[in-house]
Image 1 (cartoon, helix red, strand yellow):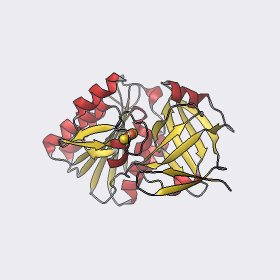
Image 2 (tube, rainbow, N blue to C red):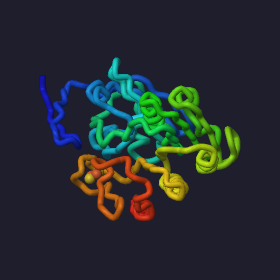
Image 3 (cartoon, rainbow, N blue to C red):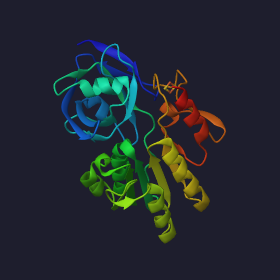
Image 4 (cartoon, rainbow, N blue to C red):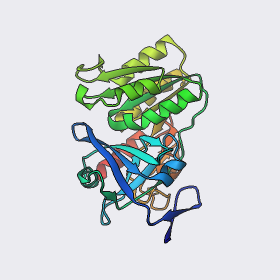
Length: 279
Ligand code: FES
């Protein structure tokens, strides 16, 4: 058996059996241009926890692209990813079919979401940020929390996994910008209502930067500890290239090894948004 060495962010070496394939076992378009794929990846899912991510290359000459883990089937070694086919590499991934193999896949990377019993937890999911929120909400619920999940999207067609989300949380709220499903408006208005009605102990936002910044601004005023799952540009995913650096509480942090979840009240969102625009 030929073994390759590869490194993750915990300073130890993962032995990777090079005979292992990352075969696509299932693929479906769950929303326009948004895909759910299931990949054979037993070594990756074995230790995967909510909030962690993987880096894939669809082809040998492809770019390395991070995606947060959407779901895992540990028993059968199956990893589920959800992604939008917007850039070159995600379009390459969307172009693969059941039976095809990814060139490589590394993970789990990053620190897991800080799951513990807080009391009342609100998970806010924007766009395809809803996918990682599934495992996060489920883990918080299993830890004994009351979990509200607020999923937001531009329109009804972009809402997915509604049934799965209902199972993962205590109560699910849906908002759409155009009012075609759930409440018309944004996730923040539901959050505001919940905060006005009861004590919230912890909030986590996963989605576009402006949405996470808006959540942070709301909860800051109420003194509710809030984390945001950061998804800046990443290259190596192991803390060596610096591409994913962000400023948190005045200190430089690397989203790939120190995060991706950080105290949302201390993140310099303007800096991250400006850096993202460069690429
Ligand atoms: Fe290179 Fe984080 S992606 S340091």
